[in-house]
Length: 345
Image (cartoon, rainbow, N blue to C red):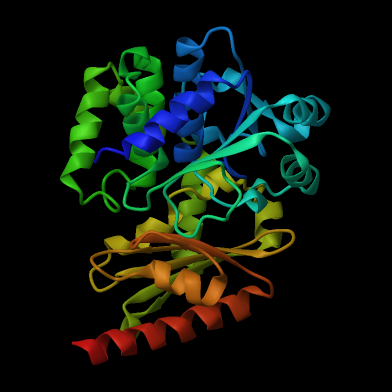
């Protein structure tokens, strides 16, 4: 896909006339959020060495993502709040990557600083239903990841030559993590063309897989065993499985968010299960991660029941209530969706 030429021209003009640029991933950034902000910012910094760029991450980077190149570029908001707020106040352009709602920056002080800023705001994202208020938006849900989208925008701007091997590696990391290692959101042949182009630019795919696969901890391995043996609930009649993790268990086992990465995918290896819901109790809300195989749309469950969304096979949402009420709502919505799909056959 090529983007409308008027959008590319407007983007080039926008960047040409801005001097202090702040870039945001979403809260609790995943591989796609980090890879896209690194890829976008590092490339533009090479094109425009006289401009000032700052990446402000709402949260710390989870351990499993610390192999992504150029993490030293990130300013972590909870650790550098005063400096981050100063940079936002001085910015003349704010870039929102991999999120389409300012509220996804989470912290009230951060959200308020962005909303009250006089800077123009740019959106680059692949999620549905972006909010209004962006001077220019590249909102393309058909893309596998924001990293793929960022690469294509940079290429169409004529900046592919500025993508170094380490930048390409960061972008590849986002594609690999947001497609579940090419298990979902990866059915457009152009994705593989774009991926190959990043490899040709020097992306180190072997390094990415090594960092994501072989640098875990014994505690993470034991957590997987505990979740599968003690916390896995199977609903054969619904082709579904549920796993839950309470705040008490998180505190007792000193579990970080990164430790639970990939848990939701494990039951999908069982024949007859094509839908999984992982329910985690955070301090202020219930978080849900949904995965599926084939053509079963877990994003429908996320949107209908949990105010969330995502892709056909990978989605998420939030719930104000208990783990039990979240589980009940998931099952209720799943039953309804299964019934609707059966009636359409």
